[in-house]
Image (cartoon, rainbow, N blue to C red; front, side, top):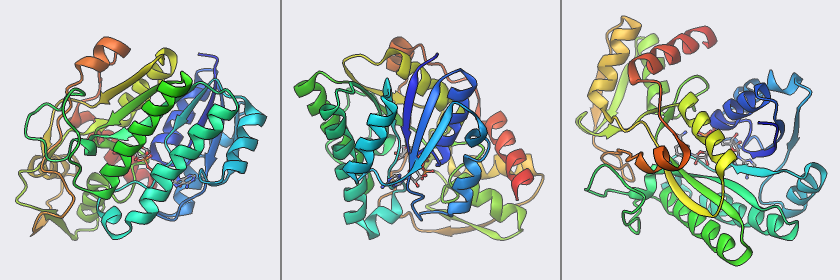
Length: 317
Ligand SMILES: NC(=O)c1ccc[n+]([C@@H]2O[C@H](COP(=O)([O-])OP(=O)(O)OC[C@H]3O[C@@H](n4cnc5c(N)ncnc54)[C@H](O)[C@@H]3O)[C@@H](O)[C@H]2O)c1
């Protein structure tokens, strides 16, 4: 692809996977991350350990809320495109600490946009989320659906981020695609997410906690498909668009645990608790727009994706 890409949140799950792929495809990558303590720094350092040895990759530790830092990075690197992934992720913790979520996800995004404007950097990919659909009843979720009813501070910050992106596109002719990711999983997955927690519990022969009765569902999307979708967006970003990146094959919590049992050849001990505040009942992506605009087509089904995740988990734990 041969582009200069600045990735915020590069040491995280999606950022590091994207950086690996872009470097393999002859891009020059500049990564930013503040090693937010949401999960262990050592995990994030390991995520970027290999890519850091590559000549086309450079990294600066710092915070997206620090406009001087961001400006220094942008002036040093002069990116063609910024892929803005840095955020406080996770629905449940956002209920406990909405102010920090607001600060990083909204004020931080505004800082990036302002610095871009000041330095005439015109292209951005913004990481939004399926959580913006809240508990919408109509499925699959389409980009045309109303998303005015988020049910967690996290979801509200992602919606606010999209609104700021549109505003900067309108005022300053920036080209921005907001990609709504649907539950991403695979090697390096965040340890707070269900597939990771369930796998760990099954391996340790500990009970796993299921919130709700097992019928809630998620449109799990394999990391390679998300990385591929981001790359397609990088090469086509023009104007302003909101685009779902999902698998469009929702899987219930109960089915997910049965699949993990099958793949690990172990029996799970299920411990049921009431559904959690802020968690939506289901997610289900309509991916026709991604197909049409980006030529996006997910290639990894849940069985093979989970098998690859479990293999990675075994090697790394
Ligand atoms: N993983 C998913 O299922 C999913 C779904 C929808 C949307 N998203 C979004 O995709 C993006 C990446 O998610 P992820 O799963 O890789 O999460 P992650 O937590 O693994 O990665 C986010 C990275 O951002 C960094 N970061 C946080 N605050 C920062 C700050 N103030 N300054 C600089 N860096 C900061 C963190 O240290 C982390 O390395 C996030 O914006 C997230 O909201 C993820």
